[in-house]
Length: 262
Image (cartoon, rainbow, N blue to C red; front, side):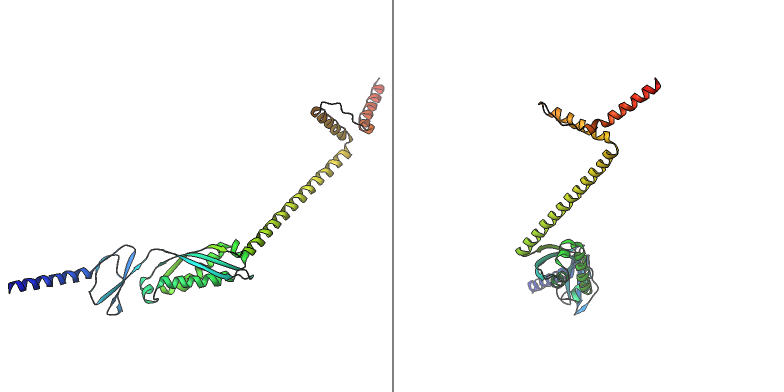
């Protein structure tokens, strides 16, 4: 009889220990527990140590950390009818664990589906040039649209980034030809601008030489000096008589002034 009582006591003790073990819960700092008691939701538990009623209470643990989710490549057609494949990455986290459990079956899957449909519709509303050059603007627009739709679930979308835009090979070749044509156009404009500036400077130099004929002689003598320094052979250059006219006139004036003074 005593052996039976001891066995029953041990069995009861084991049951009590198991019940207490299942009643004691410990959640980490980034976890929250949504408790349902006989089907009715209770205040959110955690973090730290708390107790639940075994069998009567059911707890669902929600992670509050930022979740990084890749959005698979989506086939889209831009506003200017260019087919492309676009993928993205979404950063989101749960702000309200109660809504994340009660308002939606699977908040991670739901956010993924919303991100895919929003990516297709948003990219399709822009032209290809905007998609390539205004990536930040499109990222902000994606974040705002997705966040608005996930807000009733207690999910906050913090960042959405378009990762890669894949274009058909024909479009890539066309863009390469366009870029090459643009570079050639810029080169021609730069050359034309240089020719214009050079012609302007030459016209200014001609005006100065026309006003001061002696400047032409000085330039001629400088050229002769440069040719003589580069080549060791004898160089014969025709010299126009008009180049020496300013010196003759200056000598005549000096002679007249000397005669008058004498």
